[in-house]
Each structure stands twice: as structure tokens, then as C-alpha cells.
Figure (cartoon, rainbow, N blue to C red):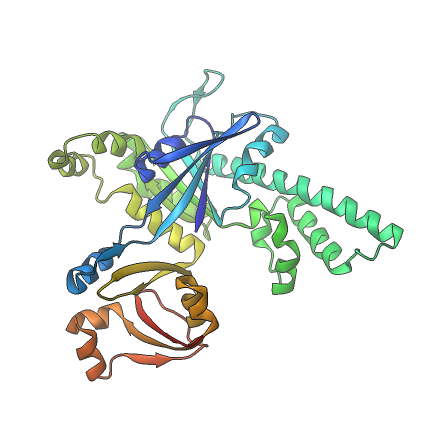
Length: 357
């Protein structure tokens, strides 16, 4: 999984990126733009408890990659903004970091708190970047049609025209109900507005205490959008304190859990993800899968050979396993099930893949 962090300058986007990656990242420059890439480990207490039981040689948490692009200057030309956004065309989802604190912008003018306006402005930038791609491709497709070129496909022309009409109407492509065939036709374009968008409201200390009010404001306007709130600068400063002092300061600021926990929870919700586990003496490991994917997909996530030779999956839910804390006892009690190719993996499943290649 890969997430792209987007936002306007001075939103605290890069501060949140540094907090989540623990300042472990590389900087990549391309022309006049640059981006930073890092990896985030997904905290999961279930992995810790499974590791305590199996005492494996290795414990591996799920993780995902993050890309932090340059902050978009407020009031910048849209063709300029599009260049910044090109770096996140390959990601699975977008994290829009929204400023919920007062301050100053590029022009030294005071910036008011307006999360709805900022989200809409970012959506506009994303949609404009997609519109440029759609129009360029449509022009080529229509030229092929006029020439009677064999490469012309009416199905591609139809779905691109549908996307253009949607964007012209000020709506993201993700709002369209596309068939599987339609999605395949446009998959190569990596449209930005088809990706899930997670809003992270970045508050200062004062506004963090009112975070639920701001979340509700956003949810009322964007009911289908995953939203959470953090105080990135406060947490980053707390992380620089001695470890035995961090809990006290977090408690004083009303920060009930680290930002990484609820940002990842919101990302999983927005992207429709789940975690499953493999266990044993060699390794206890968490894996990431999309909701609705089946046992062979999980096998392929572990190793391509397991998917090719998939026979059955031995399955037990984490909560059920923890009642005995032993696979041997769980099997003896008939709690471990055998599932076939049509089984949809559930969050918290512990899997053992039977295969033959």
C-alpha cells in the first residue's frame, strides 16, 4: 500500500509525514519539484500478543509507503499545481492534510480556518489535473477515430467521455459507478480523483480540544470521506522528550493515542483494507489486504507460488484463537476451519495456506 500526502503550504503536512515515518525518508528531486518517500510501520497490538505466544525468530508488522510532495502554494496557477501532483499518481490513496490553526500564508496575509473550503480547493486541483489528462487522451482517441485507425476503441472513448463530463461538472471520478471493464480501460491513466481521499485535520493545541466539532463539520459536507484529526507539531515535540515524560504531556494535551494509530485506522477505513496474520516459530507477521479479496489473493500476498498452487486455507479468527492460545488445541476443538477459493478473508484472520506447486 502506498499513500500520497497532499496539502497547501504551511498546513503541517510535512510535519505529519516526519512524525509518521520517524524522520526516516529519502528525498527525490525531479525537475523543479521534489518529493520525500518513507515507510510507516502499522502498530497492531494483536501482532505483539501473537509474538508473545509463539516466540518466533522474527516478528514483522504490516507497513505502507508514504510520499510527501511539495506543499501547493495558495493561489498558484492550476497547471503549476498539476506538476506537484504528478508524483502521487501511482499511489493507492491520498491523504489531504488540512490546516486547523490560524497563521499566515505565502502572501503574509492571515489564513482563516476553513477546512471545507480547503478540502474543496484540493479536490478542484486534483480534478483539474485529471481533466488535463482526459482531454489530452480524448483528443488522440478522436483523431484515431477520424483516421479509422485500428487502435481506436469505442469503449475507451465512451468511458473517457464519461470521466470528462463528470470532471466538467465539478465531481471526482470516484463518484462514478464504473463497471469492472470501464475501470480496466482507464486504470493506466492513474487518475487522482478516482483514488480514495482521507482528510487529516491538523490542529494546534487549542483547536485539538475541539477536534470532534471540526470532524463533524467535514462529515456533514463529505459523509463518505474518512476523516480524523491530529496535532502533528505537538506530537512531534513530545516525541523529542525523554520517553518517561511523553505520556504525561500527551495526557495534558488531551492526546489519547499517537497520531499514527488513528491516521492508519482512518486510512484502512478509507481504502477498505484489513489485516490478516501468519504465525509460527519462524515468524509472526501481519499482512494487508483489500476487503472483499479472497483466500487465493491472501496467498498471493504472501508469495506468488502459494496463489498458483492454492488448495485450501486453514482459518481461525484472532479472537477465537486467543481463547486457547494454541493452534493445536484450536484444531482439536474444531475451531480451525478449512476454506476454499471463494472464501473472503476477514480482518483478524490467522491463515495457513495449503498449496502444491
